[in-house]
Structures are given as C-alpha cells and as structure tokens.
Image (cartoon, rainbow, N blue to C red; front, side, top):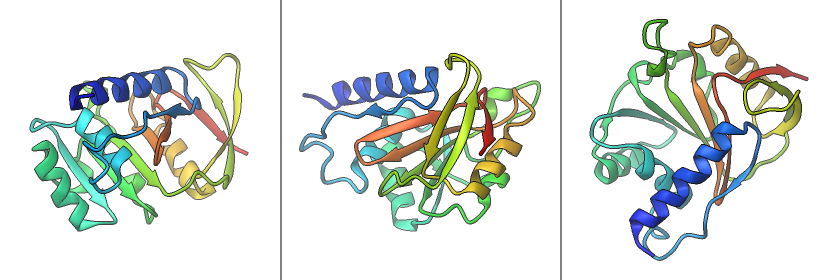
Length: 183
C-alpha cells in the first residue's frame, strides 16, 4: 500500500468522525512506511492535512515540531497564529490562546489535535448539534477544566476551534458546531 492510500483512508476516517461527533474512528494499522515516524498515527494524520501553505504550533515537544516542519513543509508559528495546534500531553491551559477565526472568516479558526497515550475516561460531556441525533453523553480523556475552556472558546459559533482527540490507532472529533455541556 502506498502513502497516498494511507492518507486517503486517514482522511475518510477523519471526515466520518467530524460529521458524527463522538464517534471513534479506527485508523488502519500502519505499514513500514510510517511506523518509524514519531507518534505514527498523529504524524500520518498531520501529513494528510498539512502542507506548505499552512502554519502550526506544537505544545510539548520541540523535536516533534522540527520533524513536522520537515515532513509537511508547513511553517511553525506562535500558538495564536497557527492553523494547526498539536498538544502532546497537557495543554497547560493554552487552548484559550488559539485563534478562533472571525465572523468574516470563521474557517480561520484552528484545528487543535490532542495526542494522548491512552483514552482514559476523565470527564463526561453532553453533546448536541449537527451529526448527533438528539444528544449524546460521552466520556472523554480531557480534564473538566479543558472541556470548560473548549466550551467557552466555541461559545460564539461560527467562531471557535475544531478538536481532534487522537490515541495511537484511533480518534474522535468535536467540531466547533458541537455544543457541549460538562457533566
């Protein structure tokens, strides 16, 4: 299987999870093409989404920032200007500093990707919005404070951020259109 095939499959999983918030998508097992990359699932996802026309910021690992720059050609920048923000481990409360777009250009809000070693249930949320029939209660690996910050950041829809939570081999998404209530 070629890299292009992995990217297409990865993008399909991401689209499905964005269209159905809270749905866990499974990424294909990674071949020898990407298994030597740091954080293979994360790197494949970002390789699929990023190119030289976008900017990014990594919180938690400077070496990974260098790797991404070389892999994708994207430009590292400050957290408040980045199109993609990667959180490796704790966000240290920095989610409130990422760009949320403007009413004229809400699409300029950041994609935030949280990479976690394991999806451990830390907090529960009630999700409502497009792609969710009625409502959905979900256990998330995010701390309560982080979810409250996300809710605040996304409170002025269409402004906000799209969130991708990723564990090696699987992901789920909380797009900015999803309303969440921390339980």
